[in-house]
Amino acid sequence: MNPATRLAQVSFTAGPAALLGGWLLMRPIGGDLVPGPWWTAAHAVWLAGFLAFGVMTLALRGMAGPVTGGRRVAVTAAVAAALFSVAANVVQLVIDLYAGLTAVDGEAMRAVFEQVKGYPGVELIVYTAGAQLFYVALLALAVILAALGRVTVVSAVVTATGVVVLAVGMVQTGRISALVAVGMALMWLGTLLLGRGPSAAPPSGAPLAGREAISRSR
Image (cartoon, rainbow, N blue to C red):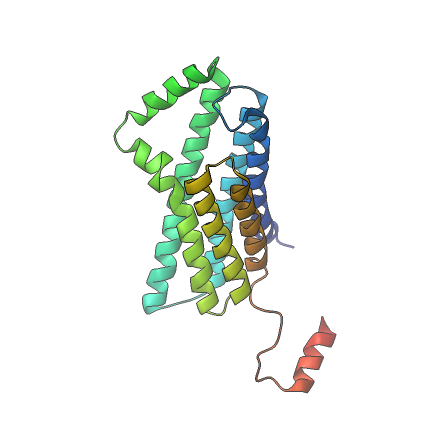
């Protein structure tokens, strides 16, 4: 198998798995600003995860295939938004790792973040709207690809459900809540299904004999 193809396939599980893995690694410190091995490990895993999300986004664009008109605009916009947000998250995680490795305590870490956020546009792009845009773009891509018949409706629905549950958990109960983990797990399952492409079942109008032949050929 082409290494690039293999990397693309792995990205559909590696990205969401890293998202959940980092969340679990933050549990011993309660998700707080505490420099040390747990903070460093969690943010290193998240960094790897968002790099995988970048690969996954490019793979989703490839799955969309040649499209024209409004569909092309929609796909291009969603992919651009996702990649922009991946870049924002990568920058955020590099800053977080730097703060965790250089600060002696939570107050020192907070001072680093306040200094960084003091630059115009950094908080908006790197820490708030820009960082969260990835999830909106992923939801949009899942819906667009389902509409184009490139992925199953089930995979799009599960992915969208994961994103919504994750967002609700973050807003209502905080990032350390179990609901956030449930959202991440659902998103993981959804992207795993997205990576498998269109349904393995033949079109509903296919002759029965053709369906049986397809089934036997697998």
